[in-house]
Image (cartoon, rainbow, N blue to C red):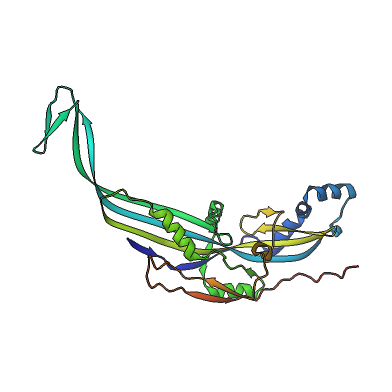
Length: 285
């Protein structure tokens, strides 16, 4: 089997909405973040905007993986075909060969030459490794291929660049296993699997944490679709921990030696100066 794997790329999706626009939209739904009880309480008590405080705002680049795998297989197999004929027929001559007939049927043997061509897209969440078809919706937005320096510049400007927890090597293996399948053949003439797209895609997300009545909640705003989530999270909540300032990011194909012997993993260290612009909390009274 011949295997070809494309070089990994880092793809950055261009945001459609600014931080100010995102914050305005999130602010209009601040009560939603605290649930139905908070909304009802606000109606009864005539809560004002002063009752809510934005204690943290975040712009982050959140990752997902996009892979495309194609497969070509050419093979041969011997098959028999049962052909019904009139009951009065005793034999049939085909290509100089006499075929006997029994019970109104003749049996032919032939060599089938077959060719299968398939292609499939895979989209994986960069944090959970789960396939997420909903992420395909981001393919329609403008994007550009970038490098580690661009990500480092984003981080320096205060954007949280979230490293993928899902390794490309495992996802490539999973996609290839799904694409290969079984071949019902006597002899395989050609089998080629091509992973012609291995993209680490970053999409912009805004998150705003509000404080109200002694509680805190987060609203997320999608920088591309403009949708808001009242049950959102900040980056450290997604990952379950606060990240180190240095992020180690896979930007090379870490392939399995079974498929491509000798392939080296390329690693780039992205210096990530994480800046959390949360104002200090006032002392407890």
